[in-house]
Amino acid sequence: MMLLVTTISMLIFILSMVVMLIANIISKKTFIDREKSSPFECGFDPKSSARIPFSLQFFLIAVIFLIFDVEITLLLPLIITMKISNIMSFTLIMSVFLFILLIGLYHEWKQGALNWAY
Image 1 (cartoon, one colour):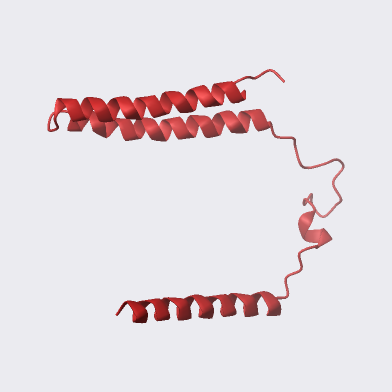
Image 2 (image 1 turned 30 degrees about the vertical axis):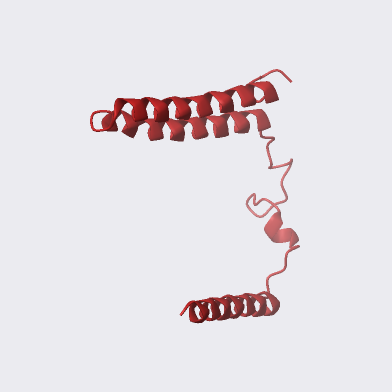
């Protein structure tokens, strides 16, 4: 039974790779096209660069905020389970989770991702 599942999985994988390869070969899309890669300004060439610089520091802070925000949403159900679980196991799980969060915050702080100075 396991051999049959493995064989069918490999056959599906090979067939999908062949289809993707054929689609890539026969497509008419060119990767370097000046008209499609340039910004559009009413049909005229742009006066200046349409690409504005983006602060990498702001992006890192936004990603760190997103990660910690998701982790806070993981902490909220633990409060509800506090009534139905053993207090020792709840305390252990909560402290390990918070310890991992603090280690992550300490690591980001030491890496300099929280500093705004250049």
